[in-house]
Image (cartoon, rainbow, N blue to C red; front, top):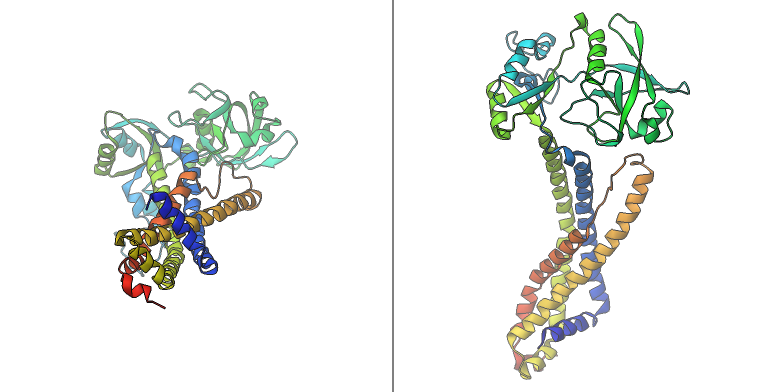
Length: 421
C-alpha cells in the first residue's frame, strides 16, 4: 500500500467506533493541554527573565563580598539547636566584621583580574515631593558606569554630573511631566534625614529617562550626591558596605577570576550567574509540572492500547481477508501503528488548540488582575515550535503504545481469522 493509502485507511478506521475514538482523543487532549500549559508557563517566565536580565548577562560586573558573610546564619533557617561557643558562634559583633574595610578593599584591588571597584552607596531617602505636593517613595541606587540603564530619552550620567539623576519611565509624574521626553530637564525634590536627625532637601535634575527593569531602581543618583547623602547618614560620616561591585579585567577568564577571589576569601557573583540561577529554578518547576501532566498522558496511553486491542478483535476477519489477498504482516503492522500515531496526532492537536485558547484567556486575565502593572510579562507563552514539538512527542508516544496491538494484528492467522466470529 502507498503511504497516502495507509494514512487514509487508518483515518477511516478511527471513524468506525466514533464514541470510543472520541473518548481516547479526549484523554490525549487533556494530557496534552496540561503539558502545554506547564511548559508554556515556564517559557513565559523564562522569556520575562530574559527580557529583564538577558541584556545584563554580558555585563562585566560582579557583586563581591567577604566569604565569611555567607557563614552568618544567626537564628535563620531550620537547623537543630546548636551549642553556644564564644569563639565561633555568630553574634551581632561578628556580623559587623563582615563589612568591607579599607584593608579589604585594598586586598580586593590586588586580586588578579580586578579592574575597577564601585562602591554601592545606598542613601536612604524619605520621600520625593511632586509639584502637586504629593509625597512619593523614592527607592534609588547609585549610577554604575559598567551597568547603565537602557535610556529612552536623554543621556547617561558621567563622573561630572553632580546634581543630576536618571529616572524610570513610570516616575515621570514625580517631576510634573506628562511623558518621558518632557521629563528631561525637570527637577526632582528629594528629602532625606541625616544622622543627627535633621531633614535636608536636595533638588536633582533629570538627565535621562529609562525603561523600568528588575535590575535598576526607579531613581538612579549620580555617585557624588549618593556619596554625600550616605556619608551624612552614617556614623562618623563613614558608610559601610557588605558588598561592592567589581569589573573584571578581560584578560582573566570568569572562572579564573572567581577562583582568585575565593583564594583571597571573597565571593563574587556575576549578573549572568543570577540569570542562570533563576532560569534553573524555573526549569525545575517546569519539569515538576510536566511530571504531573505525564500522569494524564499515561492514562491516555492505556486508552490507546485498549482502543487498538478492541480494534484488532473487531476487525479480525477483515485482517484475515487482507492477508488472504496478499497483504504482508508488515502492512498490517504499519496500518495499526499509523492508527495509533494518528490518535496521538489528532488528540495532541486538539489539546494544543485548547491550550492556545486558554493561553489567551489566562494572559488577558493576568494582565488585568494580579500582574497588572508588570510590563513585558506574558505569563503563558506557547510558541509555534513548542506546540509542534508537543504534538510530535505525543504522536511518538502513542505510536510506541500501539506497537503491541499492531504486532498482535500482524500475527493473526489468515485462515483462522476468516472463520472468526
